[in-house]
Image: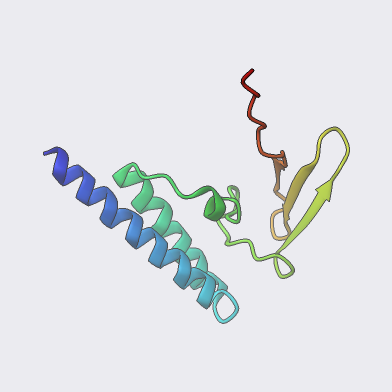
Length: 111
């Protein structure tokens, strides 16, 4: 039973990856089809309880469900005030995403 769950999750991850790649390829030709691929990806992830990778999730709009492509339908800014942040704004629904930009954690020296 445990083996079946692992294989189902693996298959779900592969299909989600394929659908996101298709969404990127089709975006400039047909944005509505791209949105449909993103919706299918989210449904597969929820049904199989598999999370989207952070890199992929970063460029999906939570409000309107669009694939965010910098320069065409989203704006990316870096704000240095109060800790550096990456700000991604969806230009279709004006949804704003903020991600903290931190340096890698330093390891403590052992004496």
